[in-house]
Structure formats: C-alpha cells, structure tokens
Length: 608
Image 1: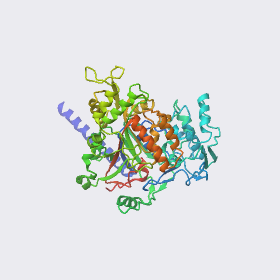
Image 2: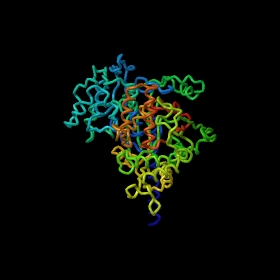
Image 3: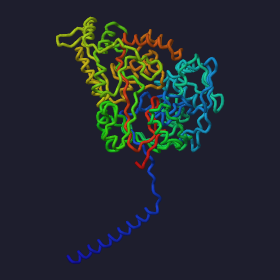
Image 4: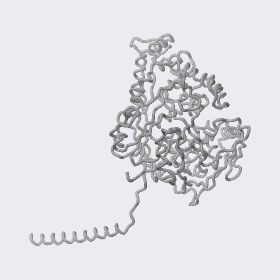
C-alpha cells in the first residue's frame, strides 16, 4: 500500500502545482491588463499634540486651527511671500470698500466658490454666498455654541449683540432676523455696519475663526452645542478624509475647490535667495499641487526625530530640545545638508508665558499677599535658563508683551520683573508667607501653601515642570504636578480651572491688539487663559481699541505693560525660533509668520 499512497501523493502535488501555475499566469495577465493605480501625491506632516476638533466657532488650539486653514476659507488671507505680511482677497473678489467715516464696509464675494461635496447637499454643488458669511459669523455669538472666539464679533456690528442678548433670554438664536450691521445685500454682496471705526477689522476678516460654512451642515451634523467638530465642510483646498483622535489626521484634495495659480513675488531684498528659489520652483503651478496630507500625532521628541531620519516625515518642527541634533547654532549640520535636507528658520510671532488663575483664592486676585506671591514666583523663574537649557538657544527672551515684528512692539523696553531669588524670598517674608518647622512656607493665614502646576505629559512638559520645580524650591514652596493630555488642559483652561500653567499665544494677526487682549477681563475663558480681571487694565485696553497703531496707542500699551509687571498675573517668557526641517523632495515651502497651513502653496518633487 505504501507505494500506491506515494503515487497518489505525487499525482496530487503535480495537479496542485499545475493549477497554481495556471492561476498565477492568469493573475499576472490580469495585472498586466489592469490600469496602474496612481499613488496620490502625499505630504507627511506631524503635530506634537492632538487636535480637539474642526469647527471654526468651537476650537481654540493651534493644531485644530491649522486644519481650519486648509479646509475652510475666509474673506481675506495673506500673501504667501510678502514680508511684512500683506492682506489679499480670498473669498472676497477684492479688498473691502470702506466709507469715509470708517463705519461701513462693502465686500463683493467671488461667484463660483463651492463647498466640498457632502451628502447634506444631495448631490448638488453648493455655492458659497454672502448669506453663508452672515450665518457663520452669527454663530460666534449663539449662546448654544459657546464659542471661545465670540470676542471677534462682540461690540463690532450694529444690532448683533442685541440679537445675542435676546437669544440668552429666549434660548433661541434667530438666524433669519436681519441685523443692520451684518447683511447680505444680495447673493454676492456683504455689507458691514460698525459701531465704531475699527483699525484691526481687516486682520480679523483673515482669521481662521471667521471661516465660512454652510448652515445645513450644522443643522444636519451639529452636536448638543451646535458644533460640528468632527464633520467640517468648507470651500478650502482640502477636506477631512479621516480623523483618528490623538493618532492621525488625513486630508485629501477638495474636488470642488475653485483653484488657484501660484503667482507670488519674492521679497525685493537682495539676500532673499530662498524666496527667489521658491518662485522659480512654483511659478504658474495649479494649486493645490499636493493631493493628500497625512498628519501623525507625535508627542515625543525622539519619535519625531527618528521618523524624520527614516524618511517617514516630509516636514517637521525642530523644537528646542531637538535642535542640537540638526543645528550648529542657527545653521544646518553639514551631514544633513549633504543629504539635501533643507531648513526654514523664522522667529515665531508669539508670546510664551506662565499664568496663575485669577479666580483661585491662593494665587489669584488683587490682594497684596497674592500679588506678592505671584511677583515672587515670577522673579524666581529664570527665563534665560529656560532658553539655554530647555530651548537650546532657539528662542528670544521677551520683556514686552508684544513680540518683535508686531505693530506696537517696544524694542527698548526693560521689564521691572527680573530673575532675583533673594528679592523674591524677601517679598514673601514681608507679606506673611512664613516657613514652618518643616522648612516649607505657609499661607499668611497659617494654612499649608501648595500650588498645582499643569502640564502635558511629553518631554517639553517634563522639562518645563523641572524648571518650575527649581523655582518653587528656591522659594521653599511646595509644587504639585497636574499632568494631562493637551485637549484636556485646554478644556479645563477655558473653564478657568487650572491653578497654574505654561501657555502660549501665536499671533492671529500682526498687531499689538492681538496680544494685549490676552489679559482683557471680558475675554476670560476665551483668549484670556488666566481669567485675569484688572479694572484699570481693562479700561486702558478698551481705549486702545479705538486707536490705530501709533504713539498715542503705544502710550496706552506702555501703561498696560507696567500694570502687568505690578500685578504679575503671568510670568512673561519668550518667543520661540521655529526651525522647520524639510526633506529634499519638498519644494515651495516657507514658514509664514501668520498662516500655519502652508500646504496649499507647496509641492513635492518626486524625482528626489
């Protein structure tokens, strides 16, 4: 029987191989006949923290705001290469026409702009109109939406605040009521009536939170707050394809995008060779040239660096802790330059600061002991050491609350708050923060003194915590650690529930108003992260809003800066230098001082 069994096995194997060969031949023939699948031109990006959502009226963080710029559009935007930044039309057909008294703006809307395809439009191409602009801006004041950016439209347009007050009383925002200050005169004409002349209105019109969306999208997909955080539908160059919270965001080219031809002039500066090269690379290209963007959430420095080294990222930001890996001072290391790696380096238009919660009974308020405590903490913190140790020299110290490059910056300002541990301890002694038998200071009422410092659980968060731990120990004050993911920190911050945190504000527009409003009391829980309320500061800020950039407004800003130094609601820190590393295939990229999603203006040379 054994020879017979072997014969059957041999026959079976021969038959199987024959059939497998026939199948392989057939599959190969089918593959030869099938059209090749083209891989979409994909840009691989990274965020160092997770986005929180994508509703223009609902988000408040840098990462979500970057996605807004790619998915939605605003009336105005910024010229890609102009230096200093220059406003240009986007949805608007031309720059607004402004009346002689500065109170009436008439804006023509480009016809033929359509929202990205979505089932809510039932297969039709949905055109963007002036009425969509009105609706989108009204949402910022709808009490149900609870927008952190309601201040963009508050006290600006005739009749809009009254409509919002009525909605607070009735629980219903009447979007169909005509508001004198915010009207669609016809399908393509928008008219604005202001309560007072507004020197910064044009900058506001270019800000991503003033983006335009369709009413039917909100009515179909809105949550209980009438926000569409996970279903953005805009008219921008890209649309959201996938969102894995905390892990990955995928954008794809919007098939309904109205299109743009790359046509920007480089700076006239003779040394602006990088801009001249970008013009040669990109001039005349149809935009967007990139078809797909994959954004990975990478919180750890080492993970980002390894991904870039392994050619898994096309662009990455070399935060301060990573800078020595790629830079010798401000120059790219020769080994990276030899590989064709590129560097785009620019100081951020921002302020990084450390705030104390104004509503907190231990560190907040205008009581003299609390002022003394905050001033002591501010003096104990060494900004120069943070720049040297944590940022590896990739930052500049700030004495003034308006950073360089922004209208209203005072280059020769010297802050009265300096690193001085001895004076800080003497101040605490004077105001009753005595040390107990255990060596730790107590509150003036004898209660234990301990302050919670909130931070992200990544490498930067740990380093900043260590810096503050050193400052607290120098004052004999206990510090508690409160670590949580970035979206959770933002959520608690908007509720005025973090006792202390290191935060930052990247400029929305290049004017001092955008930074001085960070301590304006009525914007607590919005841009005012510490929920600070200093009546004299609020009065001066309100007066400054009526003035254009110039000596008169600067004088008010100087008074406000001294109030910040006296009351010490925050410790003003630094502005980072942003070092963007690019793979050789990346062309057309230049870090913009205001825009964050430069993807529309870029391309990839896939031959490299």
